[in-house]
Length: 197
Image (cartoon, rainbow, N blue to C red; front, side, top):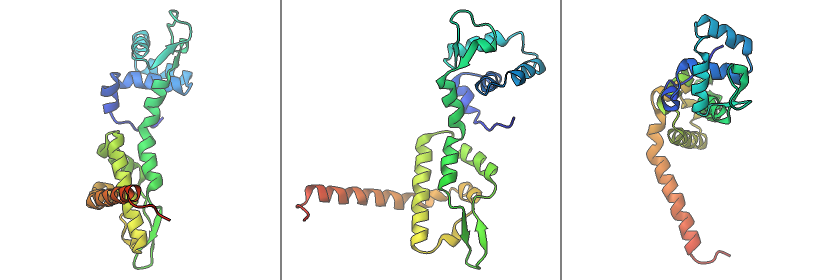
């Protein structure tokens, strides 16, 4: 199983990587894999304390309250499902927004989303799972793409991993802020102005 996760998730959630993996196997119903994992990590004896900790933190629910002693006596809670689903959602949204390809000035077709996993790691480092940072990057990306389409300059768009590494969205922040405040002023003028007819 290959997983990508920001280790800050463990700190924020007050669980360790071992407990996270237990919950992940349980959420996927991979009971045999969980058993193998527990045996290989010599943690079968302490699984009850890990399960109890996950239950106390709200990541597990007892199927029969008061009688849970083994992993199959629990089910993963909505809170844990949100924890594991939010890991990649931000990058996936960014990935969908990024242009797929462009034609370079020399006429060569270039695919801009190359090296997805490197881009995923860079994005995780940049956003640290912060939705506000993510929303800001998306807003700047949309602005740049719209501007490049309008001026027929999409051929100069950087590949995704280079765009992220060079923090390209920062060069559009002022323009985004100015266009947002101008749109707000225009809305206010229409709202408080004379009747349009």
